[in-house]
Length: 348
Ligand code: ADP
Ligand code: MG
Image (cartoon, helix red, strand yellow):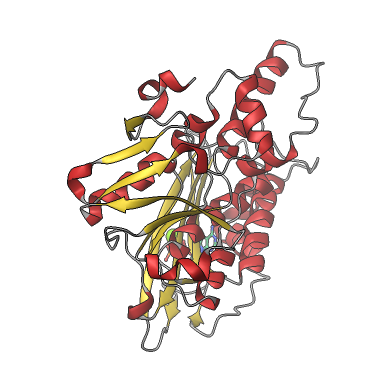
């Protein structure tokens, strides 16, 4: 799905012509970017800092559907999901590399739109595009992004640092990206049955945006730093709250108590989940792709965080033998499972 009507055959440009076309306007902004696109390797210098690297691959048909994903949004999201991993280490993201595999059905204009989204995200978050790879793909569009950043050793937050009594916090709200996806999938089916019917996404902007145009929570990292709160453990919410919290507990060798009533869910997410006969809590626990930050903080930091509206305290860390549990709104206790669909069927 791309908006530009012109179709320039990429073969006319050739691989090097295409790379040059896509990268000619790059201006490196990070001090650590010594050499970007144009040689056999990029050169970076982080002085005395630790380097953070994370990579993610997005495949057409698995991670995205071009029937309802504008290429510009796709490029933007592909960068965001990668930056999110650097922020989840409490780091500063500084560079990305972008590798694409594309089928011959894409004209130059389509790839330009993809890169418009990529550059928009890079600009907004102050990261340099320093390289990549370009190949043909027979299967569809493939985008692989590597994000690079840095942190002082003492500032890095791992998944394994949670301690008994720590407060569990999550930024923003959850389940929106998943309910947005349900909506887009439904409208796609309607459209396939009758192409004359226009998609009905009226009043659903927020959750559609949560799915198509997520924002990595750099602002939360900055906020925590301003408040001088260093989380004891942190992870970004890509697979759903349950799965991420279990990662923290497992790697920290601890248990947890998570309170259903505390889980932040936007009213539009709530309503839409209900429309689809889904339990909003299950959407938050198992939906994924919200790209919020889940982190634990010491109880001693409670006074510093208690009035913050940007994140919510949703539970606390326990000793490991207590297990990982969800306390439902009715006060029952369920074991927290990564795949919550059947496990919490009784909530619906
Ligand atoms: P090599 O043959 O050494 O792999 P390439 O011809 O693939 O080199 O790439 C030349 C330069 O262009 C390198 O700096 C590479 O990082 C960069 N590059 C290649 N493809 C892309 C892309 N899709 N986006 C951004 N930079 C790219
Ligand atoms: Mg190459």
